[in-house]
Image 1 (cartoon, rainbow, N blue to C red):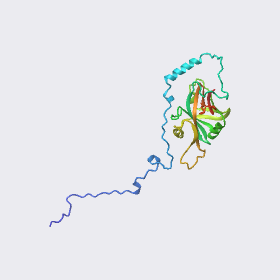
Image 2: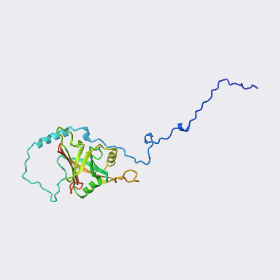
Image 3: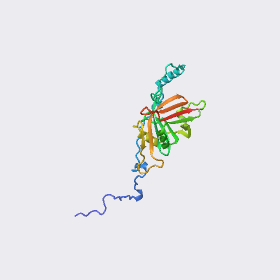
Image 4: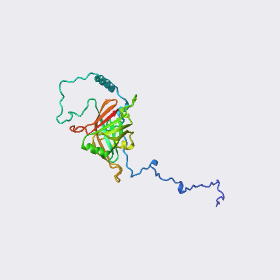
Length: 262
C-alpha cells in the first residue's frame, strides 16, 4: 500500500484574512445630505409655478396698442352735452377700468408679523412683484373687514432714471392717509414660493395655511392669507394703481394700492 508523500507536489501559500475593526465598518447616514430625511419634518410641495408672460418680453400687439393709445391721448378733450347716469347708491356701475389688466393679488403672513403682498399674472405663475409692508398681517386684515383701505406707496423720482415703477426697491408707506413706515421689494424666498404653490388652485378667498405638523404654533401666530383679483391701471410711467375687485360687485374694492413717484 503506497504511503502519501511527506511534502505536497505544489507549494502552499498561506491564506491572508483581513479582519475589520468596528471603526472601519460604514456607518449609516445621519445627515439629510446622505440620503435620509427626518420623518418628523414637514414635506414641502414641489414648485410647479410657471414664468409670467411679462418675463418673455413685450409682444408686438402690446407695442401697437401703446402707440394707438398715445395717439388718442393727444386728441383734445370734448365735453359731451349728455350726462352719464350715476348709481343712486353711490357705487360704480361696473368695476372695470378702461385699459385695466386683471391680476392676482395675495396678502399673506403670520398674524403678528409683517404682511407680504404678491402680485401674479395668474394663480399658477411666479410673482412679478413681491412687497413686504411694515404692517402686521392681522391688523391689515382687520381694517379691511371694517371698511375701505387705501395704501399709497411713494418714492422719489430721479432724473434720467429708466427704472420701471414696479422695480423700485423701497417705498414710503401711507395707509388711509397716515404714514405707517415703508415697503420693501424683495425676491421670493422658499417659504413664499411654498405659499404660492399651496394656493395655486385658489383664485380668491381667505384662510389659514397649516405649517409643520401642527404640534407647536409659531410665535408670530398663524400663517393667514387673503387672495383676490386686482385690476392694474397704469396712469403713466410714474404712477400705477391696483384695485381689488369685489366678487359681488356691489360694495366696491376693499383695498386700493397706489404707486407714485414724486
